[in-house]
Image (cartoon, rainbow, N blue to C red; front, top):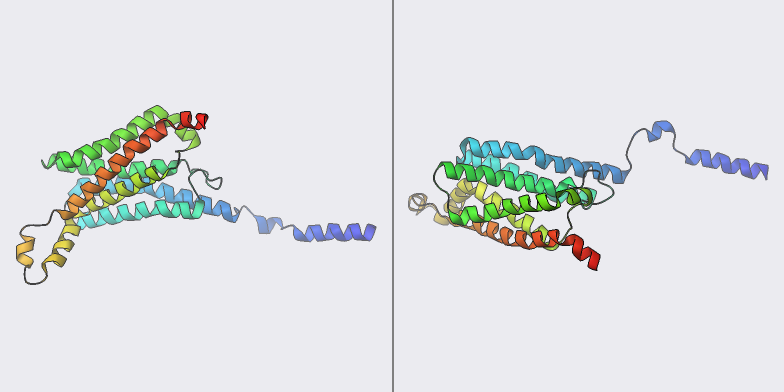
Length: 238
């Protein structure tokens, strides 16, 4: 009995990791959550840089390339933070509740900077500012009415909200990158024979496509706003 007990104790001691092996390392799931939270913070950090570039010299094609590429990189982090750390309300993530807020800050920040530049140059048009202000107004309304509850429990996930974010990010990318994307599109469209003819009248298709995405995002945002604002009542009735 004693020998067996002693062997069990010895085996148990061998199974335990030494303090040096354990250290302060996080478990694999914790590492994934920490990395995901870091990607979320990347979107916060990238937003003022993108805004500064747009306000600085947009629509200069080189500045537009840099701003749109940074926006794409920041937008892609939204996919990878879910990949590595799970959903925003996953137990693996300490700051998962900031995930959707980071998306909003990134999109709204870029659109506000773009709006200011267009207004400054007298290029504002209702087809642009209606969906933009609709998206911004939705975020302000939801934030004011449900901000405290959402900060504690997170935003209710639904396909409509995800579609809203996807179309808003795609539309913003097309609009911010439109100066160089239009040149690229015209170069492909023109070929060598009609290059000068096409360059003298740039195609508006990229800008129109970006605005169309914003309109879709605005429609989805209104639907998702209703679902978010009525989330608690619906939850209690089910």
